[in-house]
Length: 255
Ligand code: MG
Image (cartoon, rainbow, N blue to C red; front, side, top):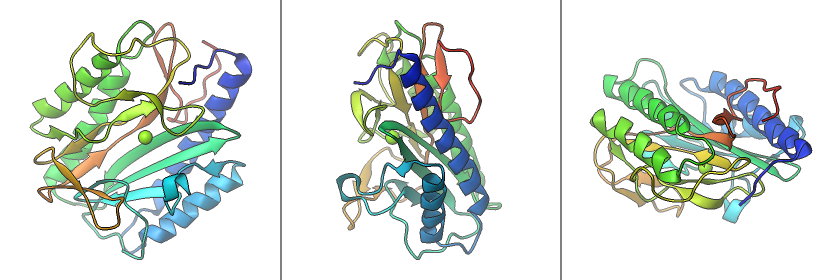
């Protein structure tokens, strides 16, 4: 598990996060009806490279693209293709940046155009749950405090929490310890320490929490074919609390 306390390391991991935030912000403008998911992926790859970084997902365990683009009943790990995004689709975009060995990971979901009311509500609640989890981050808190806050936010809205895929440490590799489940009990699990970097990533389903992996061996889909949404930020644990590295805000104060 990476722990960053040196100023040079903090500068690098913050820069990695800022690049990812900029790329995702630009990518969001491209999500319109008629564009193929492959075209969105190619744009993201170009933008990441133009920033002097590497798309961290590409080639990871053989993953063929720079983005995971998951539509509607797809939860995570959707592979970009010739499929066109349509009005009303619930689109989830997940990306990772490797800046000279400093890794950050982030994701967002959105509904294209009008869409169904429940799709908008699922997206809103999932994002809300991410921030509920982030607010628990502070050295001395435990992973279970994050998990509990996320689960409570999602379930009280009548949605369900995906069990089979969880958040994780990040920083020096795309996936590090500890695992960060989106369900669990307060005051349980590993203790957070200053300098730890966490990828917190709730995945919420409209219906049942169960998921399956489709024929391509990658894409996770809801077992009941209902909608799913996903939000993720890379977060630095500080003494006073948290610092979101992938929201595009400039942070000058070194914690
Ligand atoms: Mg992740």
